[in-house]
Amino acid sequence: MRVAFTVNGREESADNVWEGESLLYVLRERLGLPGSKNACEQGECGSCTVYLDDVPVCSCLVAAGQAEGRQVRTVEGLAEGDRLDPVQEAFAECGAVQCGFCTPGLIVQAHDLIARVGRPSDAEIREALAGNLCRCTGYEKILDAVRLAARRKAAT
Amino acid sequence: MDFLRPTTWEEALAAKADRPDAVPIQGGTDVMVELNFDVRRPAALLDLGRVAELRAWGMEGGACRVGAGVPYTTIIEELGGTLPGLAQASRTVGSPQIRNRGSVGGNLGAASPAGDCHPPLLAADAVIEVESRERGVRMIPATEFYLGVKRSALEPDELIRAAHVRPATGPQYFSKVGTRNAMVIAVCSFAIVLRPEERRVGTGLGSAAPTPRRAHEAEDLLARELDWEAPLDPALLRRFGELCAAAAAPIDDVRGSAAYRVHAIGVMARRTLAWAWNDHLGRRAA
Image (cartoon, rainbow over all chains, first blue to last red; front, side, top):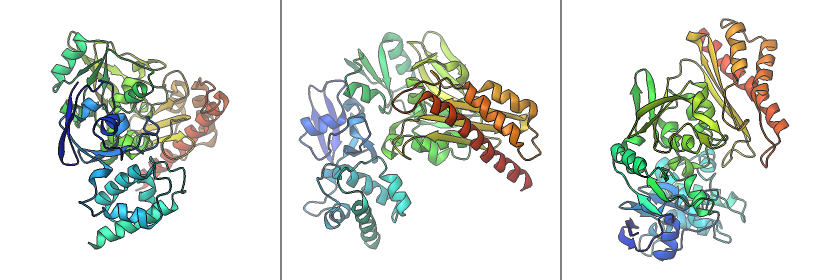
């Protein structure tokens, strides 16, 4: 089937999509957007987190057809031109990126948290990121990055 | 595989009547896992995501009618006061991303013995509204909804439309055993609902039997012997825990042993009743 939706502000469509295919597969394999990562395919790891109509979801658990006509925003759509989003900058500065596989999902999820809460407490950060698994860094630097990004966004 | 996209409830019922082999998909948090791992190849998917009314809740006939597609996040944000037991259980589901998509209707449709919604729905005397094009609406009490492991009273041409749950009139609690505070399928779980005006306590056991179930004998014990004006009698509390544990019929599996689950149900039963009783007496004193 054909699936058409808006990705990062652009109208996109894909043909010959299998009806049981995930939104994640369409993004990565059909639309050339490999930022969202494919790891667990069961919603356990959060590496495929994207915005669907402004709500963060695991794109591996959205059937591609469910995205028809809707707005998707991936990690590729957070920067403005060459200027990284403050969350992305903070992850780079704080050393919150090691192998990088979990990073796109964490960045989208943290981006949503800061947009909703502004200056989240540590408990709120931990709760918001509870569904994003990192197997390298141990999360401390990730928490540093979210705090820094929230501080900077609040200051602007 | 076909992908069916009704935009109204009537269209959804027609689609299910014409294609009873179609698997309904709402948030996808269960259905997509099965597709991704190739454990299920349905002839058709019936996407309910475009049927807007399923994502609404409202008061109806003295009960809170929760549309089958209302995501857990909405229950947490909007129904914590009206349905505290269900809201507590919703907070323990998966992660924020899962709670943004997963719904009570999906939990009911999957009918997993470990589903987090089931114990609070049972304990609160919830009634499940299902409908088919040919036979209309059926109102199924939660106690009669779960028939076996991942089997429910839903007929192949029916869809789940809503859960009707009476608002809390006393304290409610949900407790769940797992290896961490997020992303956990319940090892076992327990819900309790106090109805002070009826002098009655409702219970719900999760992941402790082939289906979610109530602990009827434990409820009967409290109906007979609980003094609603007094501090909780420790002997009665202990017997309540024992009868709740006796209502469990769990299995050994990767998440825990049967013996552990029986023990944990007894502990959670005592704890949640004690928490609820503290609130009850505090509320009366206030």
